[in-house]
Length: 388
Image (cartoon, rainbow, N blue to C red; front, side, top):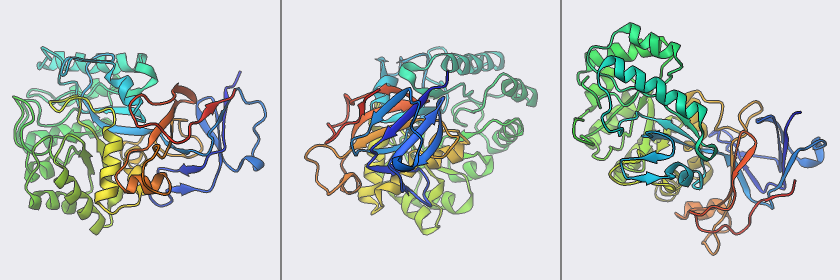
């Protein structure tokens, strides 16, 4: 039997698309976990619904995407001795996480056989187990000396679709890294590079020249993780390639604003995507993506509906995902939220533009409610309600 979800009485529908960030609609229908119809309830067929949610006028947006995390196994990370950090992040409105490498595993194998085995295992265990329903796209091997083209074919054949941050392993020169990134791309594996100063023992400086020579799909934490490159190098990266510009919570916030302003001048804000780069020395940030949206909107004089696109639609397009956009056929992954109680601003968008976090009332993944009133955000003014 098909599962039909109807969400009605939506007050504001954010699309995730920078070119049209607000949709004219008050109802959304999903069948078997995929969006099937968007519009006004009076014009839609809600018959046969197996689940009904009354949004009570709150805002619905595509679930947020954290483009840069370092998971280990299940919902546990030894980096900060955190249990249930992924569940906590779900309560921050994130419904999809993307691994930049499972680097915090004690004794992480660095030989070619071992690193391939770890990547395949990581991809498998998060495919088979979703902590609290969260989609964790993992299995991101770190490049090490000695890898050959056949290794990338083996990884791709096994289902691996990501490389961990280039530069965190023993491959430190741009020529070798470029060859491996090209092999990965040949087999459909997307790449990210560490950018800036060393983050942990064993990592090193990755400057603009190496980033450009390596030619990855995403410039990982362009605002540093933690230490940012000099301003002229950040500007150079924005101007000299078309790769994704990943801004992270754990980086340099001044450099984040420089990246935003440069991308805006270039009319290329569609390249901006957001991550937390956690768990890390800065800890776990369950509200990190929301905080980045509020910071970039408030300090960057940016409409909140555009800033939210950095956190879902831009990442969906950059990463070629079937989630992160309100579009027929896309995964029914949503966050329902409202202006926080007593927060300044006339509505949720104005409140975010003033630097305030919204209150989250519900997350939905593949058409199934995965959390309700957030235990981490400030309480919302209004809350959605499951009525069937």
